Length: 119
Image (tube, rainbow, N blue to C red):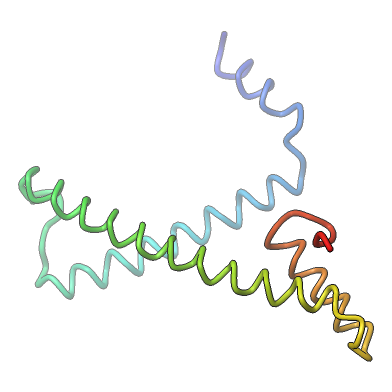
């Protein structure tokens, strides 16, 4: 299989919306990398990452992965709180503004992928 054939296979479901989403992710990744990298160089006194000993790179990477896990677990906890609030708003018949319930439904759907919370 040639590279072109492989690309053609992936194009069966790849839409313009996928392309836009991918481009958005790429731009965000480049901007984030540049900002973080430059800040790191300044914070660490001009450290040349490419000259850092492999053992130190591994330890730093493990520390970063540990931080990332802590952030993700905390984010998940916070998302559960928001989902509960949205669920309450979706099912609260005392809300006088129907737009409020609609917004809660949209929040709930965005967070869970479900159109309506179970009653």
